[in-house]
Length: 362
Image (cartoon, rainbow, N blue to C red):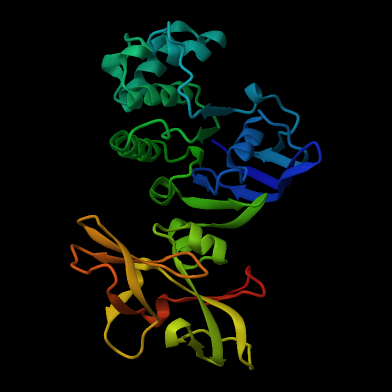
């Protein structure tokens, strides 16, 4: 298994930069998840690591060895694609053993390796079936098994669950997590747009946006301590609510004035001595609590309600911003048009300086 390091890596198509200044150090045994909006370069970065896309500048190292010019087949990498890419005329066993046969591995060794991988993926009883006789989840497991038998240094997963229905996604996600536990020294890089996959599978998450990395951290680090407003609103579902605020006083604690006459004291020291208009307060939907007190963070009229049973989502329209969303546990009996006030524990609030959105006060 291997360590992987990207140093100032970039990808340019013609004169169009797609990725710039990618610096990332992945340790052996980590499961790293790339997330970000569509078009941010997640899959492109994965393909650069695999050798399917040329690195325009910078370097890629695996175990200290430069890989920029090394062909994909010699990088010690196995990739699981979004499409299963199975040979339809070959059985499960033959699909899993195909690369080993090409490498002229002895037949007895191939049988042993394939049987072991099939057992770990619960595919033993399907080894003699053709792909068309398998479900989507089983086909994806065959694709994963085909990667496992090669005993690669690094596993690459490019949105492997996106073609599955909701129930199969959950089941296969759990299987991937269990597989990682059985292979604690394996290094895996996983691309997804699904936050649940990222939060539940990752050792660390890499958030990509606008050609570069916004933040790298554990799932809870990104959730609790986002570096900037983009990460704060991207990680978490529903997204963090962003409320414009005026700093009224600063020091060891900061006094804020928000919309609709709301106010808040946050335990965040700022260097701002004068009143400033370019701040925003972030509040997660699940941290907002209905209150009757005068000390509230937000007040609005319900425009839409989603009753999901375990939680109820309340939507509040805003004239010049995204809707404010509040997540309340259980079944609630609020009505559209009802006005509510919400408070948030001060330690749960995030404060962002709009003059420099990469600057985070916490």
